[in-house]
Amino acid sequence: MPVENIGGHRNVGLIMKRTTCKFHKTSVGHRSDTVYGCEVCNLHLCKECHVAYHKAV
Ligand SMILES: [Zn+2]
Ligand SMILES: [Zn+2]
Image 1 (tube, rainbow, N blue to C red):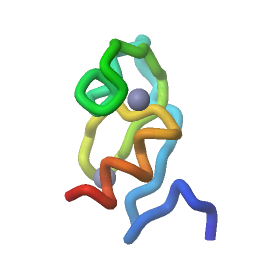
Image 2: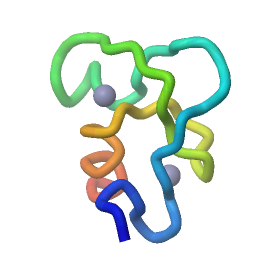
Image 3: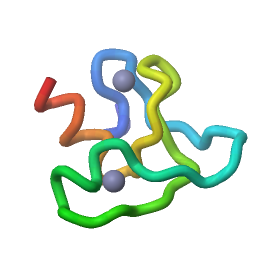
Image 4: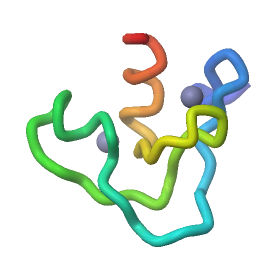
C-alpha cells in the first residue's frame, strides 16, 4: 500500500487547474499550488500534506 493511501484516502491527480493546498498554508506557513488532492475529501492536498492531513484528523 502506498504511503499516500490512508484508510482509502488516496492522493490522486485531480483533473483540474492548480489550486492552493488546503493544508500547506497552516502547516508549512506558505501557500503551495498543487494538482494533487484527496478524491474522498475532495480537497487539494500535495503529496507531503496528504499524509500529515489525514493523520492529524
Ligand atoms: Zn501541501
Ligand atoms: Zn481524504
